Amino acid sequence: MKITVIIPSYNRYEFLKRALASVFAQSFLPLEVIVVDDGSCDKTSQIQEDFPNIKYIYQKNSGVSSARNLGIQNASYDWIAFLDSDDVWEEKKLELQVDFHQKNPNILMSYTDEKWIRNLKEVKIPKKFKKFGGYIFKECLSHCIIAPSSVLIHKKLFADVGLFDEDLEVCEDYDLWLRIALKNEIGLVEEKLITKYAGHENQLSFKYWGMDRFRVIALENLYIHFEFQKEIEELKNSIKNTLVQKYKLLLKGAIKYDKIADIKTYKEKLKFYE
Image 1 (cartoon, helix red, strand yellow):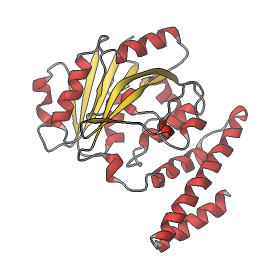
Image 2 (tube, rainbow, N blue to C red):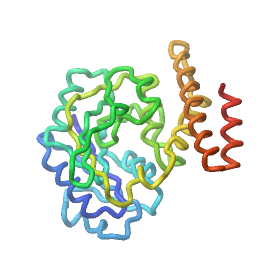
Image 3 (cartoon, one colour):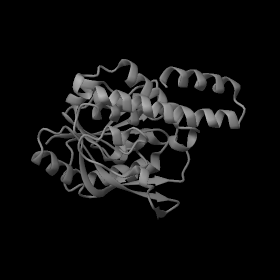
Image 4 (tube, rainbow, N blue to C red):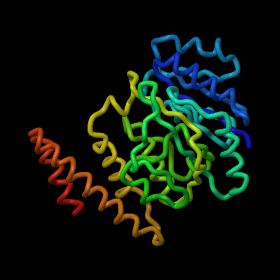
């Protein structure tokens, strides 16, 4: 298998070096590594001096979705592996996923289990992030259980469902995996083959409060715009039920903090979806 690795990065030069080191330490080496610099103002532009074999692309700061999409558009090979610049791979990450896809040629996307490190200590992962393989659309509805850094995916799926939504500031991965999982089986390699680090600056998951505000946008877009075939029509109801649950929680928060405009919005949303 010929693989392109795509690493978006914004002002994470030191972390980026660590991420790239884990790529070039793989037991199965990718044929192409693309770093998309999303308008960094640190030393990220020097990264090709440290790793001369990478392809470095600079863009004006436009967000992680735009950076990943630019990487996909410039990828030379059909199989794409994503890696966030503050994460690292275990040595056999790609090897085990390649082996999985060679044994399961009809599955065009796989992901792996993960390890979390916060402030240099491993932390227990909450049960809501439990991993599943197969037709896992319903398991993906509540939260994003698939880390981008764990994914190996064939370009054909982007042609079928589209790229990352550049209008979403966060939860762009949650949105794309749902679009894929709606009609496709997703493979799981049940080993902790990536390490996700937390506790540092510029993490999108810490930058934005109320992540469900973005998840409901993704769910609404899917509910309204995605073409549901007869055999998966039942899943549309699952989306609606999840939207109702999330809007009730958001309404509760809006009432608690006396957010008048949000209270009105969420009441109207509930009236529409209930």
